Image (tube, rainbow, N blue to C red; front, side, top):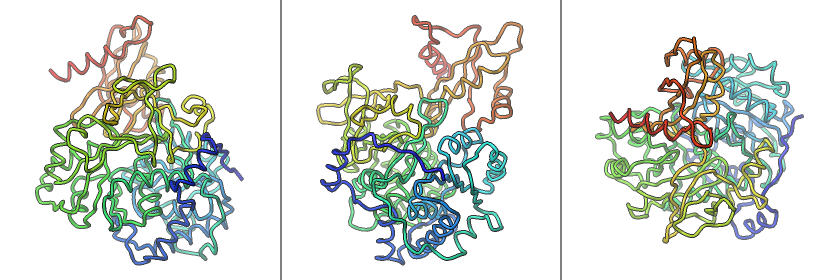
Length: 541
């Protein structure tokens, strides 16, 4: 048995105060979902590529899977890793794990063997649920090749396959779980994955309370209606942004979740037109692609109350285009898997959305802006953004990150720079780390730099983000070649990264710049600011 080791970095008295104040429902995700399923069994829970599934059918499937997992020996606190496209099946896995007190570790389709090995090995996952095949990539075969390096992995379920170890057979066959396992709402429920500024992904452990209470309050503040929620998630449900799908939209609020297996602008517009969501969650790139498609002109968007954009900054022109073409409010969402969140309100004035990411919501996360000395800076001054509130996670899977990103009082150090204006709005003005945000996905330049540096022809390397209208940023790799070695092309470098190191395609650099020597700052480090400015200037020419 490989139970996840956790520690709560938030003081117990503060957690208790949030409970007494009503910020926490005090029930597990399964208990919350089961209450909704009993109250409205025929309400549609999920709409996906396969159609619709009701609360009653979803409950039945989740209980059968929970029963099968218990008979397979999965114990409370053990980790169930999940890599599947969006749909009702990963939602059922989430709920089944909650029913037996297991901890879900979802990570999106597209993460390759390097991340899979890192995540499953460091979390000591006991079960993995993976897609048989998505596009040309065979995820089940790739995981099977890694099993000798994953001694804690006892069970692998394959979605979309045949046989006794297929997810579909476990969902449909065998007796359901007779009674949910008795676990506390303060127990771990989910691990969110963030690339952050590290070469390897960070894993952040959240309790049932933090998901249902803190993140639940974040979504509730955007709803502005008495009807059950109808939320369309364009982002992967396995992402941090998408974690408000099964845990919040369904388990906490008893709403309807709309999703597609992979983002497609036409399909997204068809879902809006036909199934009438109230809120749409995506990254700016997705909204830009939808706005540019001819189908937009023939889409009925009258059901929408807001489009909610996260993942990267968005320019005012695109904000205005979203407002005008979707005919609804635009919401800026700032947050991270590490435990910070701040959003504008659908009722905020337009200018606030151009320049700010909202006022902090104490039911979600309080925000501090602090100087290098750890003391809050006055309004209008720039400092590092820290967050602490009911959505705060328990800890990182790796204790070394606790020391780096959490304070003694439980505050999360984001590494982002911001300021608060006189009206209480938070403005994000930059990043201390150098994460490249491409289409809403965080890319770590450190990871790519470490791999490129191993190429025998490379003497120096630095990866920087270059502004891009569609994707927000694209990764450029800057190199200096060793004397006597032939120069590299972008295609050759991409082949090296994928074939030799197994780097997934989504992380590959999209521009290559070759220099005689990379410029150095006065401190002796590679001057990335100069590189960014040079490459951005070339893009403008």
